[in-house]
Image (cartoon, rainbow, N blue to C red; front, side, top):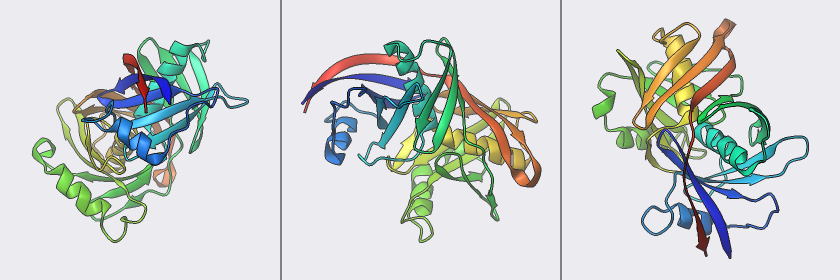
Length: 260
């Protein structure tokens, strides 16, 4: 099977995107993992199919780099919106699409994409961590010295603990500095650190509000190894959050063709 693919990245979180509006491309788990492999494939943190969906601009189907279909991806969603715009599937500066966690709205301003995230409630506040679901499940812990922390070891310890090993969880270590909230994320399905994680950045921004260190009352500037993102939100009673927007760049890298 031969097909065209497009490579996009959002703050270093990189993805393979495929126009599958005619449902021609059918890949199994092994094939998806193979093309995402950095040494023997194209290389990416994940793969997405853009498909038609009645009543929406498109449907987003997301796979982690291990080849398994996964939950919502914040940076990936911003990239697929930019991709849909490039293909002409979106005619205006605003789009509505459906993903695994429901309906999303996106706004476009050149390379900058603002993504409406799902409302967040039922946040678990632990002794030194926060658990919340921003489209994907996240564990957030605030520590000192995040840049030099052994994120992969800590991430694996949490992700494969008795509580989380069955379904998995994404692990974020964060701290506030003079420029914003610095976040590093270990992603399940990738089973390693990624340069940025949109749902992890969102989770860390909301947790920083509860923790009392957000950069502003209704938004936080988030810094990652791959670049800068902004998360805007409204915090309500009992630590519920609505009107959540993830904002940042989504850029085309290259186009190619592969035969597998």
